[in-house]
Length: 61
Image 1 (tube, rainbow, N blue to C red):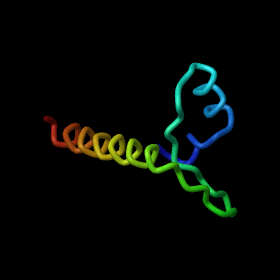
Image 2: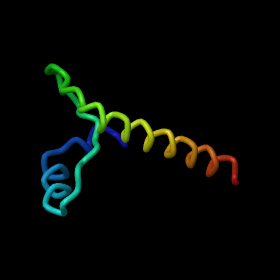
Image 3: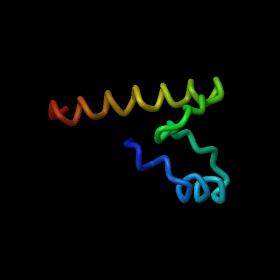
């Protein structure tokens, strides 16, 4: 995911659906807001699987 995913409309929509948004915050020149430890753990799991799926796609697997 890129920095555009850190938009208030996406955060609001996710919460309206009853989800917990796990999105890396873009500080946009301000101080970065760290994730809660449990959210950071889930974020790291998700990005690891995205990288794996991306590599599989590129390799034609």
